[in-house]
Length: 64
Image 1 (cartoon, rainbow, N blue to C red):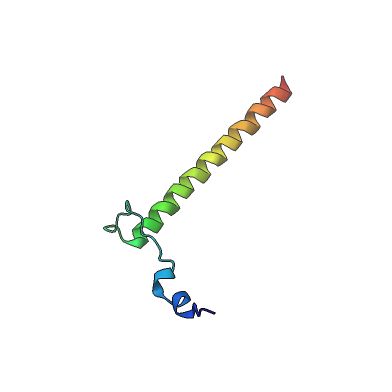
Image 2 (cartoon, one colour):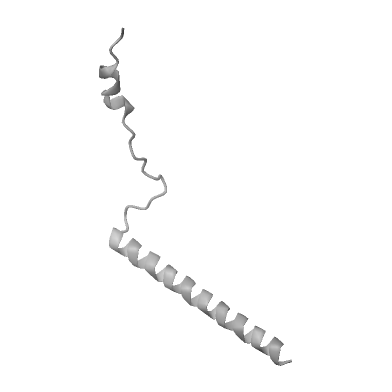
């Protein structure tokens, strides 16, 4: 019988997180969060506007 416990506990087998190569580390994380929140807000506003236009179009169709 072979004891593989030392092999299992070897740090070689640990999964290490990969750092994206294209990540810009010059921008603070707070600024990145603000940018993401702003982009999300723009997307929500655009979606809201699209939904409003869709409703208006459907109302026009029903009226005619």
